[in-house]
Image (tube, rainbow, N blue to C red):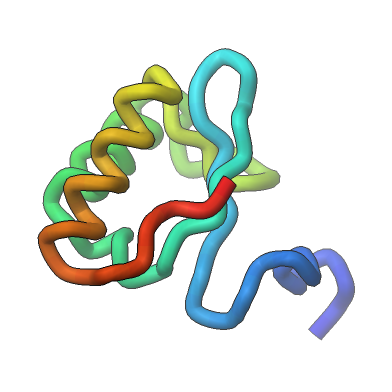
Length: 85
């Protein structure tokens, strides 16, 4: 695997880094969160905003405070581990 295809070294196995909002605040979240219906809606918004040809980190076009609240909800609904920033 080339270095361009590797996850950054600070992203633990089973997690993914995403950038959120106008400031591109970086979050590291469990990869399993991507399957949650709330996260699925955020991914649809990202596809509508940026398309599929976005090269670089996964970017979510929503307010950082909303994203943090969504992660807290997702965490409570199926995991004891919260979001990392």
